[in-house]
Image (cartoon, rainbow, N blue to C red; front, side, top):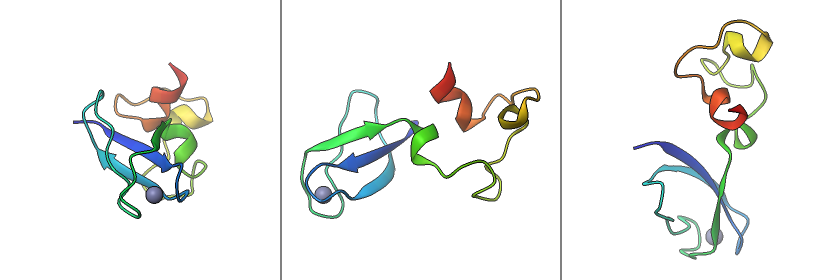
Length: 74
Ligand SMILES: [Zn+2]
């Protein structure tokens, strides 16, 4: 299953979880169901913010097949 980032509209809690594409998880913080799926590219810190998340595609190089940045751009 793919990893999606969500933001809760009730308590503004942001989280990531493995989820089916057509499935909306409950907020782990308040248990509310008013969560919105975020683009993983936006939810993640900028390139270099996390070790291992930086990809050549972010700097104009050849994209790697599993680059998380591609999901939000293509
Ligand atoms: Zn919440």
